[in-house]
Structure formats: C-alpha cells, structure tokens
Length: 392
Image (cartoon, rainbow, N blue to C red):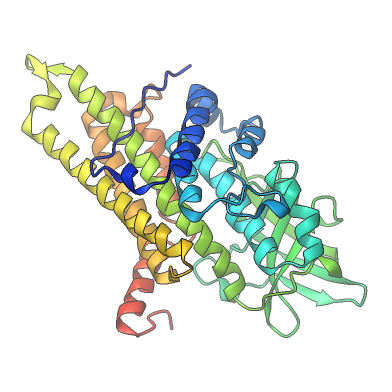
C-alpha cells in the first residue's frame, strides 16, 4: 500500500485568509484522505472499483452537503469550507471528489433549494449521513452541452407521473438509492423529479471500459414507463435554471477540487526532483526542471487566490455563474497542464502506479469535459464580456 508523504504548499500564505474553523475542517479531511484513501486508491483505479467503505467516512468528515443547515442533517458550513473539503478529496482522487460533489451539489442542493419541506425532511438527513446515496440525471446520449434539447419526459397520469427516457455519464448511478432527474413536461418545461431505486422500469446500467475516474462508479439511468409519485416533483423551480443552479454549485466545488490534484502532482514532482540523480546531481538542480516547478507553483498560487475570492463572493451570495465558469475552466486546465509537466519530471516512473501522476492526468481529462466543457466555459465568459450569445 502507498505511503502518503504529501506536504501542502502555500506560497502566498493563503492560510492567513482562512478562519481557524476552516483550517480545522481542511486538516480533518486531509487526515482522512491520508489514512483511508491513499493506501488503496491505486488498487481501486487498477480494478475500476469504488470502495464503498469511503461513504461513511465522507459523511463523518462533513463531505456530504457541507453547506446544508443542521436542521436538515447537514454540517451548516460556509462555502469556503465546502471548497477546502473538495480540494482535499480531489488531492486523493478526482473520482472520490466527484462522488461527494454529486451527492452535495447535484442531489442535496436541488432538494434543499427547490424541494418541498416534506422532501427536505425525508431525504436530506439520510443523504448527509450517507445512509442514502444519490445521482443527478441531466446529460443524455444525444444532449450534453445542449441540455435544453433533452427528450426525457414526464406525462401527468392523474395520480402519478409517467417518466420515459435515458441519461448517461452519471456518477454514482450504479449504486445510487435516488436520482434527481430533469425531464420535460407536456408543456415542454424542464422539471426536476426524485426517482427512487426500486421503481418498476427504472434501471442503472454501469458504464465499463473507462480510462478515467476509475475509482468512481459511472452508469446510465434508463426510464421505461416509470411511475413516479406526484409528491416527488420538485415544486419550486421550472426551466433550465433548475439544473444550471445545481451545476453552479458543483462547478464551484470542482474549481477548488482540482487544486488538490495539482498540488499532489507538484508535491510529488518536487520531491522526486530532489531525489532523482542524473549526471551527478539531482534533476531539480537543472534549469529546465526548475522552470517547470516554478511555473507549477505559480499557477497553483493563482488558482488558490481565484478560488478564495470566489468563495468570499459565494458566501456573500454575489458570485455569478460566469465567475464560477471562469474558475472551473481556468483551474481544471491548470491542473491538467501541471499533471503533464509533473509526468515529464518523473520520467518513465510517471506512468506507473507508484506515483499518482498518471492517475490524476487521466482523471482530469474527464473533469475538463464534464459539467461544462473547456470550450463551453470559454463561450460563457465570452458572452459575459461581450453581451453576444455564441450558442445560438
């Protein structure tokens, strides 16, 4: 089993901007990752399995719905604390962060923000405790970046809704107990509805053959004349703003999370550069290696400043979707570039499971695509600064 020698890097003394509570929350998550995740994550990726024992640990460190109020079973933390937890989880593995991010921002958030009081009391405490696991159904086989084109639909049958359609690339779906599904009603309006495992006609085939996010479970959601009780409809939102509101929360978590992956790659590369001897001296003594390392810590520091400021704005309810979009795009691309540079510093060893580099790199190839591709986020920023909509 791997030994976790990770040391955090804080070049601009960012810790001085955090409260004692925020630092304690981060250290708790970091310690859990070192003890429970790092020793087995390489094997989990090699075997393409999600270790189910992580679920209770995630609940215990407050990783499920960190910002959900205590009255509904959540820890009631602020947004920066949520970000810091995601950072530590993704330092362990992007698939692990994805599991927690989906549960928090794509399942618990819509129930909390759009659900009835009955739905909140029924589902949120169990989701926070890890007694229920959820997934989020938006992406379809033919509708990814254009979710408004979805064909999954619900029809009012008097006593229930009849749900038909399919969703794909769904994290947690193979083991999820509930799914928050977005479908069009008979008026063509997008609505959210809670679908429970066990409903007749509802199946969750697992996706196989992934080269990325192998330590998380991915699958489909298939609805074949599924009867869903009317009380499962989320009553307080209509239209695309519903799922996009969830994605804003999830993208915020991703912007923080990928810093953890970048820090892990940088930390490993820095340590390796001091130990690996070539031409009679450590490779860290060569100019080109120092250039790589200097650029890495610079980009990590810029991303840390970006997310901290975004966290402040989010705590004040002033963060815009476009600002969140910019942070998600910038930070994922930053982390992916750092993973690639770190792989070169490690040389051939960088492709082995002895180091975390290739695993992070493969994971980040998914993260740069999901919840808004790199190019889509560029266009969101472009539309925000020019006022012109390039999507239509």
